Length: 87
Image (cartoon, rainbow, N blue to C red):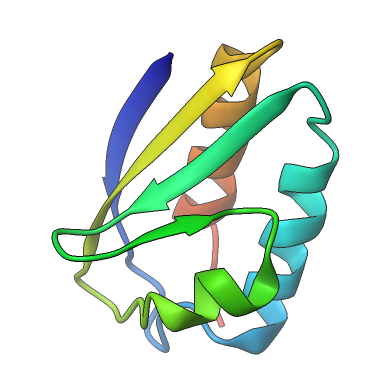
């Protein structure tokens, strides 16, 4: 299992458009299960609705976890995606 933490810096947090793009990215890592975890909730990164249910606002710290094939690459890709959300 590979993990890392990141703080959401997007001014509008994680809304529908970036959540959809994140889910698409996560689905691209077919051999890794990618999970996003906050202090109180956890979500499958490949599910738009699960990601939206986290209610990620700007300033929220999340942990990215991946297990399976390409887990390190999956965590890095998701981390970079979240770091670069600007809308």
